[in-house]
Amino acid sequence: MDNIKRFDFQKKPRKANKLLLVVILLMAFPRMWWRRLKLRKTNIKKLKPPYLLLCNHGSMIDFYIMYTAIFPRLTNPVVALDGFHDMGEGMMRFFGCIGKRKFTRDPYLLKNLRYCADKLKSIITIYPEARYSFDGATSYLSPTTGMLAKRLGVPVAVLNLKGNFLSCPQWNKENKHNRLEADIKLILTADELKEYSVKKINEVIKENFDYDDFAWQKREKVKIAHPRRALGLNRILYKCSSCKTEGEMVGEGTTLRCEHCGKVWEMTEYGELKAKDGVETFTHIPDWYKWQRECVREEIINGSYYFEDEIFVETLPWAKEFIPQGTGRLKQSCEGLTIDCVAYGEPVHLFLPPLMLESVHVEFNYRKIGDALDISTLDDSFWCYPKNKKDAVMKIALATEELFALEYEKVLEKRKAAKVGVTAGDIEV
Image 1: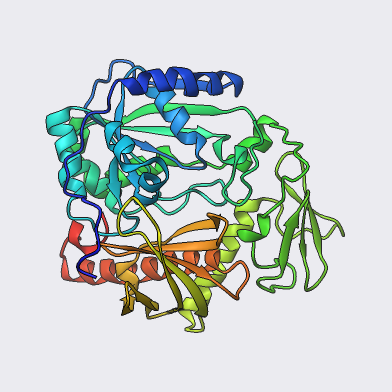
Image 2: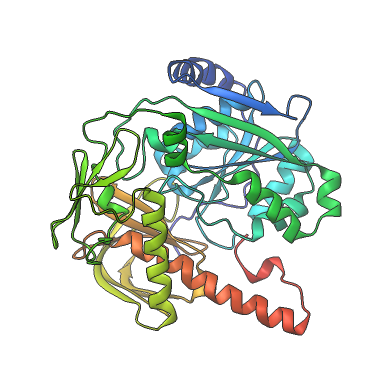
């Protein structure tokens, strides 16, 4: 395994080449005009780099909106390693991108971000949720986001997008071409970062980061009449809210149904779920998703949570290629997550306790292989495809986040009792 080529995270980022401005003019601007993007700017016109830009993340169109919002300036965005694979490492570095493995404690990231702020004097763009939203609403924000902002010491702006998720959610990538809105706003000055505690900074970020695309759709009467708008909805709503059965939901056409009890919901043109029998459970998709999270949390608290399945494994040691590694076994319990497989001809036993894994990245039908989990260490990424259990990856992601949250709450309680502050080394930055 020592001979395997690895991605070089120590390599210093460069300023984005100005050729990217031409790409933005030719590709982003026409798309945004066609999608009737309404862009509102607050306290941003006089803001000059360096500054930190935090964006919510709903679909691939987010990048077009972001570059349109900051035009004619460019940025150094933090991009996951699979993004480097898809677009090519050379081009990504040429356009100023900073590579990272998802949900790892990268010792080089802060150094590279400091370099962008201090030497390149650039805009640093981060998607703090570190993955796409699955229900179109604010997902888990790491408590280290505020700490990172304070350490960088540059002004903080938020780009809050609306309609981007509805356009092309990860569980249904058929583009709906609905209209878009975006608000870019300065929320913290450099002086405020010096004055405020990390807790206060996190509160300001969270307040300005809040979003709910389905609520926005209903409020703004954004009609989406796509004939397959419910296709794949079972990938995130895997548990029947009527009979509580898991893994037997089917989303197709405009309906979501449970194969176990037969209950059917119609997804309206305004994103609501209406029960065909008139007995409503959840009409708002994020509420159903939140209920599933609460169910998983309860399983963890009472000690009953457990998942195990055979998996197909690929690794991504560097940006050039995924390397098939055959089958393995993935287990997750209240003690943590375990992967057993053979990689590069050698047995691998990877165990990650809750505080070592803040979340996991999920892809649906990734590269036409199947639903996938990206579970990374500092020097490799294990892409795991469950082979037998239907719609399993979403629950694993929720369980990972809840396991971390519960353990982190214990850490805070212990430190509060001991009157000791939480440091960046405690959790992923």
